[in-house]
Length: 99
Figure: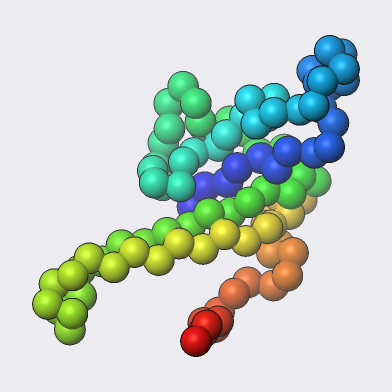
């Protein structure tokens, strides 16, 4: 599992230059398509009392669909309190079907 640091409305570097903050003002921890180590642009430490976007994904080949590769991605907000992680809206355990 990986997380991306959420971008607040202002950042220290953006405030110094009086500009709108950009994604580059905050580090990325891992990548959605790389659930393992991400040297260089990832692998930052998690900070206590910080909310992160947990972006999990899985891809499998389904025999029932002729071996077709099916990928499911899920993003949920979660708080790291220094000891553990708590999903802000509870952990999603059911499908939300859109017809």
